[in-house]
Length: 116
Image (cartoon, rainbow, N blue to C red; front, side):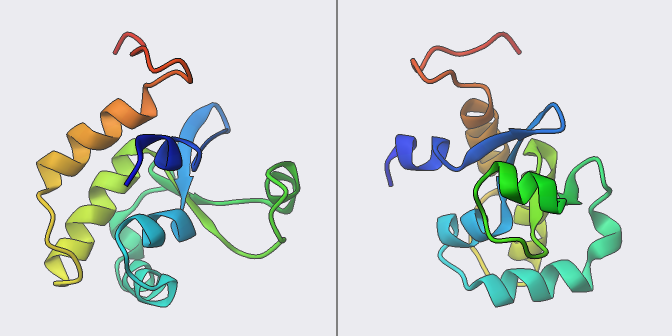
């Protein structure tokens, strides 16, 4: 999987870098329905600071069809990976996912790291 393909799926919304639920499903090679089922089951474990629903204006801004969809911050991705792992859906180390997304979320288009 190419780094650029993942970076292209990271957006800046509400002053935070986020990745959308359908892109996470693609990244982890699981169906969107499975991801949404797990999210629904564990909604209380993901606060709004880590995951939020896009508004119709945000969907238009991103040129996406207007429909309910979730966006995840770096911490939201880490929590989601933990949920997916506990449900037996993926087999990825949570610490690895956290380090991996920290790099992705902080990379500039010219591939230099921003200060953390």
